[in-house]
Image (cartoon, rainbow, N blue to C red; front, side):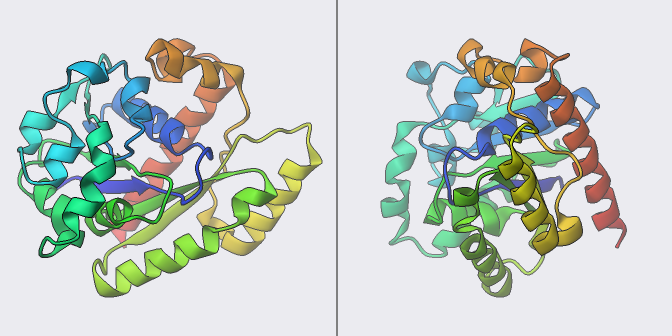
Length: 259
């Protein structure tokens, strides 16, 4: 079975999708077989891999609703070793449709149990909320990565997310662990970034990755070209940071499995 990692934060605009897309690309470049599952109805991860959302026959909505198999929903990207299950706008209504289902929190886990053996890692891009869709991702996951923007407002709600992770661990998924917190949109010219970093490292300790993701215009441009930044400009500062982060995540995964 692969390791399943949910990338989650209840706040939008903190770098969840960018982190998912580029860490997955870096892992694939390192020879790992990687699947990205886009669980955000906005479909930004899908767009970042150049997926044409208008012509989708199946999506993560169909997977989570039990309407198709994983193999039918998977699309290959232009990155070797990397495939994606794209999202669609239909996913926005999935939460209402799941309410009356038995074991609704386990819908994604059950779908993934059937046919993910061909992958080393599955990365799930979660929506910016603590919705039933996010709960499904956390129930299916082995670990959670939390991107955190280097601004004080981004700190609001992270305690709620950690509390919810602990609730899900206690009631639904005892193996779930916080793999780490990644600081994103870091501006070294700004004292605020350093202050937020100090606060986060004091609170989370070693759970915070050494790598910080800088503000970088090439990272922002890449999705409009339908490419991860590692393909768009692999030499830029943002690409190098995501390569470093992926290395840290793989090392932590190795350490967690060794325990």
